[in-house]
Each structure stands twice: as C-alpha cells, then as structure tokens.
Image (cartoon, rainbow, N blue to C red; front, side, top):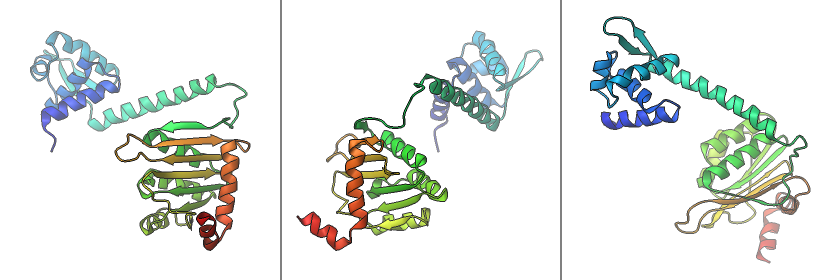
Length: 264
C-alpha cells in the first residue's frame, strides 16, 4: 500500500498538472483527507498558509470541486472523488476537441496525404503511435511483420478494429506464442509465414498499409536507447514502391522458393 504522505504528494503534483494551482491542489487533498473542515483545520494539515486557504477554496468552488457551508466559521467539503475525476475528464475532452479544431485550421488547404521522401521516427511510444495511426487509417489491407515484444495489447486492439471494419489483416511472426495471441485477439486475421527469420537482436517491425504507407523499424543493439523507424506514404513514394515489390514477392512465393531466394 502506498504511504499516505507519498500518495498525498503525488496527488497534489498530478492535480497541478491538470491545471490547479499548488495551493488549490493542496487544499483539495487536505479536504479529501478531512472529509470536511474549516480554514484553520485545513491549514493544520497542509502547507497552505491560512490566509491563502480562502483564495484556494474559492478557486476550487469555481471549478465545482468544493462546497461551502456558510456558518461561523465557514465549513468546506470536497465533492466526491468520482465527481472530481469526471470534471477533469470532461474539461480535457473539451480542450482536446478545441485543440483538434485549431490544429486543423492551421494545416494548408491543399494538404495531401502523401509525405514525400523517407521520414524517421525515434522512441518506442512515438513508433507505436505512428503504427496505430497507420492501422487506423487502413481501408483495404494491413500487412504487419513484428517481433513478440512489439505486439502490444494496444496494437492488437487496433488490428482487431481494422479487421472488424472489413480490412484484410495479415500478420507474420516466427513464434507460436504470437500466433496464439493473434488468433485470440483478431480471429479473422490471416497468419502468414515470415519471409525470413524475423527474430534477430535488432529486428523490429514492418508495416505495410493499403499499398501506400510503409513503416520499418529496428531495435537498439545491446542496451541501446530506443527503437527507430523509417516511414513513408503515397503510392509514388520510393520506400512504398520498393516495399510493394518485396511484399508482393513475399506473399505470392511458396516457402521453399523464399528460402532459395534468400540463400542466394
């Protein structure tokens, strides 16, 4: 169980990240622990000066996080924890919607789907985001060659969603464990043989979506810092053109033929 002082400090920090001032966050946490209390009682359980309690509570009341009983002295009570969580959820959902609209307004009116050239993305979270974005945009086919460690539950969920909206999903991997996970998570996915041993130390993943988006990644050697991926989009993108030829050869060749070609 988390130590109460540690939990209190962490809660205050997280509330500040959500937009509360330091005094507001500390005052809310103090009230949550007290159940209800006066300014004097709150100041005794927190580092907020008593003279600043009233300002902090006023800010909390404006957000709908604290109720005030007009007695002598005034009595303060926090709203339920679930109500507070819903408040921040709705607030940030609204903020994200507004941000999405503002960002869309900043894009060029002639913005094209194709990103000319080959781009680089570094860091596992960033690569995951790029993979999920590509899978989400798929309308026809997803080909995904991956090592076990990179087939996360989130990736599986996106593959399942793609499959359920009618996208053909083909997944290749060299281990039975991954095939079992795929069959359980995405029953309609087609499991295909990897064109070569896809479990070398630096091997990452290869994603090919709708024959117009490609992503390939490598993992760090030894204790290297991060996963790195290259990607490109557009039917005429050089990376897409090259990978389309390779993928067509791979998916149309029997296993014995692949082995012969690779040996050469």
